[in-house]
Length: 237
Image 1 (spheres, one colour):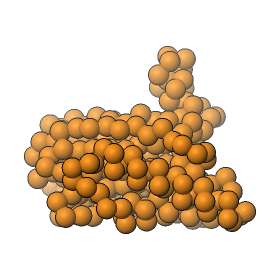
Image 2: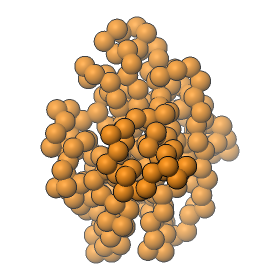
Image 3: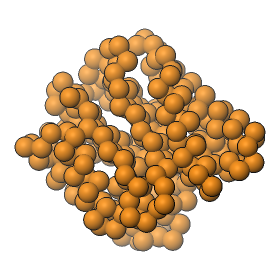
Image 4: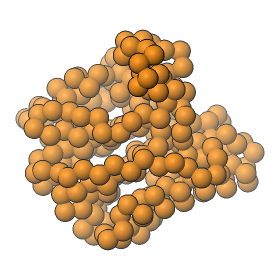
């Protein structure tokens, strides 16, 4: 199996508002994580809408970058449409990190703070930027990494889907070697576990991908489980 997936509610939240996808579409491998936000179950509606659109989208192997951008814009419009038609959903939104792998090449579309990591040669590298207030402060050097971890506005997003017409999507491309692992995850994992702790789990060669995914969620939950925890692993072959 090329994939390992897990999604749990955690110890504090009443409902899991994360959604994810990991499947093959012909010669393409498609992975995605969406972390919804909004009251009255609306966060789940937003993230499930995102994953449904991705699942049903017909990606062309020859137009991956434009297709990823178009798919994410369709997600944005669908969420806005549901918000306008259902007053109880107003203000809902979601992150979305979407990866398509074809012939040892990764194309990522990203908006929000659900991260993508590349695990290559025993080293874990974050390959997306968090679109958050605190990440911007960190990038500007206004706060330290330690201050960022405990900042009161840690969860304030600057970009998400479903909040306004027209979205700015980050597109990231990466060549992949054999045995490279891609991790997509919600902030319920990364707020609880450091990159070094995540890397330690992925370096456990005796564990299968599914076992690694479950161990990541178990460790994040044991550390507090303050949010929903979702992880999708893909290993290139």
